[in-house]
Amino acid sequence: MSDPSSGFYLWEELARSTVPVDSWDLCEVLLSKDANYPGWLLLVPRRANATEIIHLSDEEQIQLIQEISKASKLLQKVFNPDKLNVAAIGNVAQLHIHVVPRFKTDIAWPGPIWGAYPAKEFQNDEHSVLVTKLKSAIEEFH
Image 1 (tube, rainbow, N blue to C red):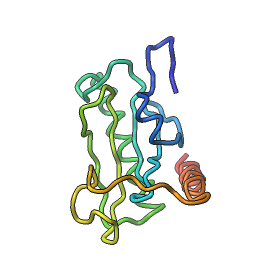
Image 2: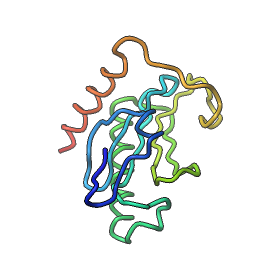
Image 3: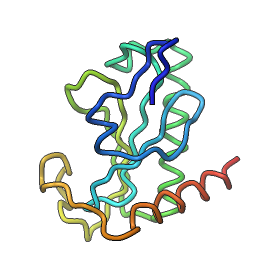
Image 4: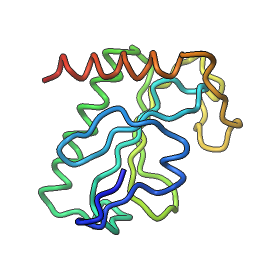
């Protein structure tokens, strides 16, 4: 996922650890490959050199909040989690927002997910089934 004309590229680690779900007005919507937390979305604004929310224009910041809300509603509908975690956390070279459905039954509950347990691979076609389910739910929002 890159656009050389705008200077946007998807950071290598994000590309490796996620799969694309959709492209929204501002953000690429990615699904984490970590099966410990099914439905973990990452929103990546397609803006070159943006590492902080304050690097976005005022209008883009509003759009980002709207897309975070859309992702949250999507996850609420598809997964009905006990809690939603939303965070712009990390010290990498690209702004990205985590939107994570959390369940009282998940491995790290009630603590944070970051670094709590090694990533777990999805089995068989579980990941593609999740992507299909999310894409279908996104279509219903349009």
